[in-house]
Image (cartoon, rainbow, N blue to C red):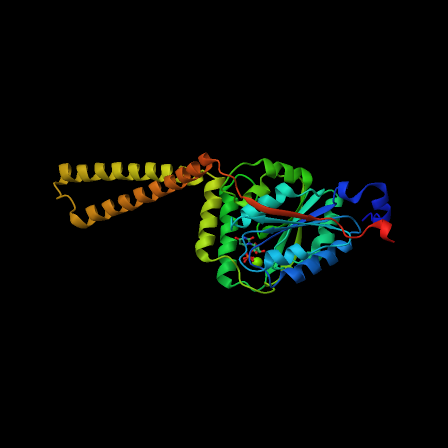
Length: 335
Ligand code: UDP
Ligand code: MG
């Protein structure tokens, strides 16, 4: 990796006008317990790059001391920027705010709870310097996550890859590096229902996969529960594929064909053999089956209409309340 000594770098152009090599985007919600360690470990990792970088914290409506904490962070060599959303808009919106505000030549998305170890940053940047425009971090192990979460996550990734038209690499979360070009494309995607795994995969570009072991959370609790995960899964499916609508149509056609054949059989049996028409249980079964099926299809349709409704309102994805930029505190003139 080519390292430009900071001093030489600062002499050629004013630090404030220089473009950071990397922007590390860290969205957080009530993470006061971990932010100090997070800042420390991210700075340690960035110091190995020997280049001017940017750390971008996005407070997604925290209720604890997180905002006050990140606002105190400064660094001798790097710019630290803190954005505060006016309320909790969700991690997806917070990440989108970060991607819009980022100025680095490449961007890394990182969780504040240190489940994505910042120590991998130099390796990711190296892969990018060697030509990869997207460096995806694939989880080898998911420490500290239950068997149930691992299995459901695995099934979800497989299902999504099957139904969406572009590749979503299995076991790759938001922890990844993206070239500025890729970020610019993602910033032009206008949808409000933001299924980030899909959006991040959509632009394509040359990619490289690195594997890592996902650590358990440093402190605090996950912000996810099964209701939220089901919501996320439904959002992912309906924002990236219209296949469920097609399935409803196909199933409708299949049941109609079966019903028609059954009608012919019943008709023939009655006319030819004079059989009495089968009674109550079979009628009930068919009515219940069709009723259930119709409700399901209407539900699927409703999901898509709901998406259209939300998109048609054209509301902003997030509202920024505060934006503070702390320039590097080291000045070459000081020495
Ligand atoms: N997060 C956020 N907004 C939310 C929920 C989570 O910014 O509404 C942040 C959270 O603080 C953390 C990251 O997103 O830095 C991942 O969240 P979490 O650890 O709860 O998810 P998990 O790792 O369990 O999937
Ligand atoms: Mg986490």
